[in-house]
Length: 282
Image 1 (cartoon, rainbow, N blue to C red):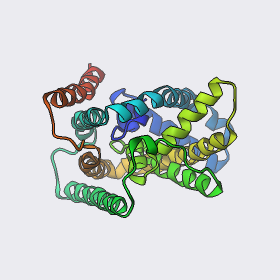
Image 2 (image 1 turned 120 degrees about the vertical axis):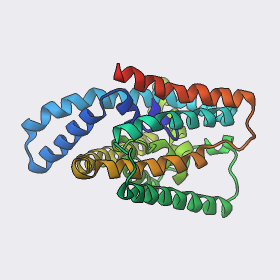
Image 3 (image 1 turned 60 degrees about the vertical axis):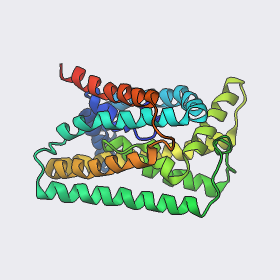
């Protein structure tokens, strides 16, 4: 479900639920056994991940429509809820990544992550200035799906998959920065609507498949890489992710001045990750 929300990392949610390390462990083993062509050894690890993928797919299908209407009719309130979820997850990321006490090396990686996100935001602002603003209702229109767009969705899936492997980085936020978030959401909702009516839209199906294939390949590749990096550079990796997270809030922050209701939404949403983290400890 959280994979649909810009700013909220699926890996962070997995960490809150206490299954993050297991997911990375299983996914990295699947990648290793595929490389070694040891299919029998791979099977038990793949069996563990199968219910996870089915759960992610179900959550995307069920929650995508809700997020669509929330962003369409209550954009600022929804964005503030996203910000609260991000802020509430920070203490858990800092604790799990052993970021405190802060050393020079960790500070350097934090600065690199911050600089990267600032660069992405500057690039995004430049792109918006060179393109006319898009109305929210127009942004939900399905784009032209051709071979070029299928390849784009595949590569976008590769980029987004890092959010499933590295806590703190939101896949939906990456989609938002790339300008594909609302389009992917529209394609998914349209395909589900047609499927409910027993009508298969093959162009939309191929678009979602291209995105899913890129997502899957990226997930196993990043999980394998991160499992290796965690051994010697885990603290630096989380410091880098923390820099990305903090400055990603700039993109999600609403455009209107804050009201009392907005502040209340921010407090309530920030308390959710904190309560989940406390429950995971007990």
